[in-house]
Length: 360
Image (cartoon, rainbow, N blue to C red; front, side, top):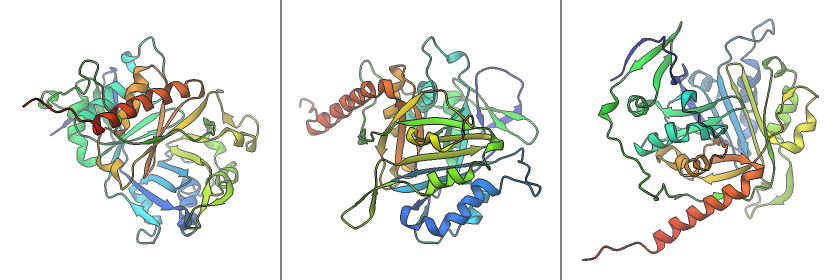
């Protein structure tokens, strides 16, 4: 059990946001049936009758890949969708988003994105069998946990963090006893977490992680819709006749008034000057395969990738989708990360092919 009290401390903390989220996927072929509902949630529900932007914006994120549209949104927003319609699949879990402050755990190695919290959040949760669904944005890294794992996650993280939960008027501190958790570290000497899932480093596109003022969202809606729904195809088809998309990836996240976009840098010219916040950093994507809902059921998949990247003091942004994970790493360090991950993956495959046998 967890208890709550009014929070006044300024120590490093984890804040559980006041959202109950659901995750769903829409197939490429079925997106036409849901376009109106989707655009309503993304662009229209956030404005009052006099077209003024609402102060409270909600939580919605959509990731478009060559396979699917993966969507995170508040439970209430699901009423806009026909959940029994063909082409739409909803994960049964309710998810809670948490945000960790870096605070005094920052070292002389400056990293961005989820690398800041890999050792303090992702790995402890993985070691305790708690699966996560991370979402990096331009300003913030959100880690979604299952509502059913809430109490255990608080106990795991309380050793290093002061935990608060958003209330109606103020944040409340969650008081837990972290001693109830049996601490286990996966790292033992030089043996680190193996990479058990395959990943793909063949997306040659370069991506930007950018943002815009909330007031600009509506004026740029047509550009964003075009990028979201009309991915450029190379004209080729798969064996079953479906159209191939070459490495397409696009993410739009709207969380409160935090607008975040991730897209191919070749599309930057579509936006008017000075609309986007662009710091000139560019990224390549590593796609982690998670078929058959394994990403929702199995703990530690994100940690397998993020642990070595963080240990090398390399920045990483991570965006989850329904069937894949997407790790974004700096273009300048992509080959280093690729070599590091491929080596660890190869070591795991070798150990599986030649398991050690103990002496009789």
